[in-house]
Amino acid sequence: MPPKFAAVFFLVLYALCPVQAIEDASEKISGPDFSTCGNLVVFELPEPADWCIIPLETTAGRWAVDPTGRTFYFASSEAGQYTICAAVLVEGKPKLLTKPFVNRPNVAPSPEPSPGPVPPVPEPEHLAGWVRSKTNELTGSASFEREKNAIADCVQSILNGIELGTIRSPAAARGVLRQCLAGRLAAVSPASPKIWASFLEQLGGEIEKRSKEHPDELLTLKALFSELIRGLRE
Image (cartoon, rainbow, N blue to C red):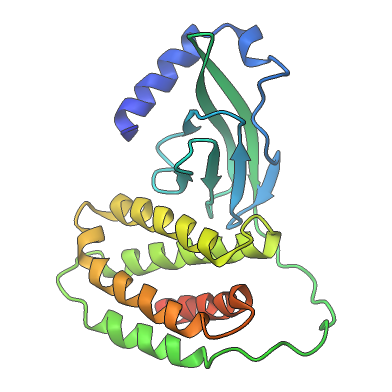
C-alpha cells in the first residue's frame, strides 16, 4: 500500500473501528512490547494484513512487510513509543488491530568472557576495502553520506536480528535486507535507489561468492556484514 494512502486508510479505520474489536483477545498482533534502538523487531499475525506503524513521519523507510502479509519488520535508531497497526478483514468487515511498542535507548552491554575460538571466516578485511573502492567510484549524488549511512543502518539491523535469533538463515537475511534497502534509500531521495543499484548488485554477488564456500554460511555472513558496515562508515 502506498505510504500516503496507507496514512489516510489507517487513520480513517482507527476512527471508525469500535474499541472492543481492537481488544479482541483472539485477534492480537504477536511481538515484543519493547526492544532497544537498532534491533530488528518482528511482529506477526496468522492471516495476511495491511500493516503500518505510527507515527508515520519518523518511521518512513524503517519497516518492511513479508510478501505473505503476515510478518512486519521494524528497526530504528530513534527511541520512543510506537503503535504497530494491522488492518484485517473479519467476516467481510474491516478491523484494526494495534499493539504499542517502546524502542529504548541502546546501552552498551558489559563485556562477557569469550566462549572459545571462533571458526575461521573468509578474509573479511578484503570486503571492507572492496566496499570503499566501489563507493568511491559513485558520483552524481548530493546525498552520498546519507545514502551510505542508510545502507549501513539496514545491514546493522540484520546483524542485530541474527544475534537475537529473529533471522535464522542467510536467505532470510538477504530478503529482509533487500526490503530495508529499498525503503531506506527511497526515503533519502527518489533517485537514490537507481544511483546505488549497480553497487548493490555487485555487492550481492561478492557476498554470495565469499559466503557460500564455507560450511557455516550464517556465521560467515555475520563477519562479512560487519566488514561491510566498516567499509561504509569509515
